[in-house]
Length: 296
Image (cartoon, rainbow, N blue to C red; front, side, top):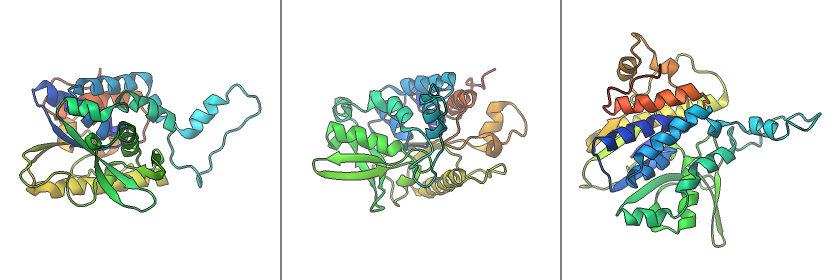
């Protein structure tokens, strides 16, 4: 199970790739937020592709996290006398959806067939923005077009990207996800389902954030981070091995005594290429690759 919103998926990608290099293999999976894509690639035997993709995001300065305002300004830059303003009351999210669609495009096609070829299944967490209902959806049991749309919807976290309009025949739903969509009480597995790895892109337990800003988007993401950390901790009776950022692991990885995870670890929407590249290595370190040190 991979739970990660936004840039937190860089940590998750490094961790899942490290587990795969140790010989861990999975045939059932679950994902919330952009962690759903990382989980999918892990099930398909391409965990290191997710790691490479996030390292590349870091090299390019994280184009996926371009804001709607920034994207609009870039598109009209050549037009003299045009000023772009944001309408906070109508924008469904802070981030431009084009970057997310491009990032997920390779995994959005023919998902059910590819899972079937590996004998695998993947549940992703989504929430209906209209009814407020949350559900785990098995991508191996839906049509290919719907599976791709559900993957994009799962990645859209509140405060980041807005809901995805998912159509099926005459029926239309506005679905989004993020890690908070996983919080409907029960994990996506039943009794006697064996052991699970839970890779979380957020600290577990939730780390104090003394430098938290006061913007609405930051506060929304912080609340989700806290709730999801508590939910993972509540799964103690399940047979799961948790890989997540912790204060002690961060200090050991950074090599800096007193390094403060709560100050230095990003919120999901943050756009920082160097930090994203570092998160990939931190994830691998937390999953057992002690040679995955910070970039010099």
